[in-house]
Image 1 (cartoon, one colour):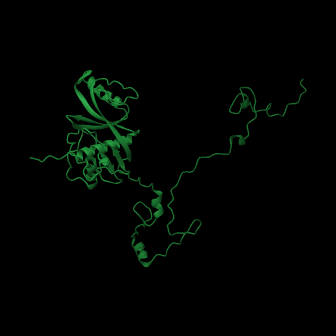
Image 2 (spheres, one colour):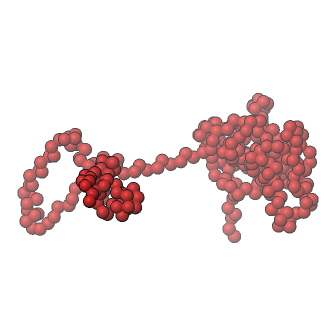
Image 3 (cartoon, helix red, strand yellow):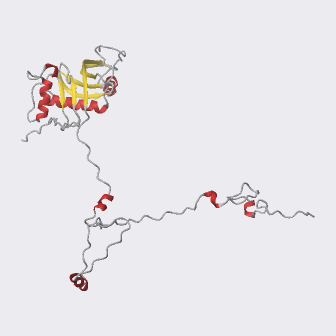
Length: 315
């Protein structure tokens, strides 16, 4: 006969359901004391649903002020109530008070319109004449100072494609070689050209003396397009981009905006005063100093447009 008294320890006299294993048991068949509630942190409950409450009137008192008493109805209101005529509710059609400014403040504000214009640029271009005759375009040495026929300069910038000394396209790129290898590859795969071009591609590549971002290159591209059109030498441009007016938010200053092989012929009729002044400086005249010739300067908020496509008259 066992003379030992039963132990009062909770580890020995645990509930049978914990002996078989459970949420608070260490293992199957091993009794374990139930954990205290504070181990799991404070009690948690589902949050109450949000109920929208109409803000107080703007002329009311601050927090904690007593609500104003209802006004006494007049005789006309009593007469309408007796006849069964209901008074219209005060406020707007959406249930908000008519004179409550705080109600409008709770609505999300309207998104401000995006500023019209382009980024400011201050750069100088160095133009090099290129003639592409073969595909693919060979790479030049890293520090090459001249560009032989069949190649393009290292780096990127803007370029002008010419045919019979007339500009037909203006573009921008971060790498001249990658862009024109991709263009010639599409023509090669379509069977338009072979490894040797039947007709060489002539273009002017304008390399910036300092690196330009993509937005800056697009700004220079847009400015050159409008200079050519307003100077009456862009009548054969094959641009697919917009020809709407641009209003730069910051000043645009481009030295040597056109290569020496492209000269402006005149002035387009109907252009703004800002555009005419800019084209006059690029074209050059006796009243403008020589060091400012072929330099495009557009002050902030100036209008520089390009009306290119004309509607043909009907029969």
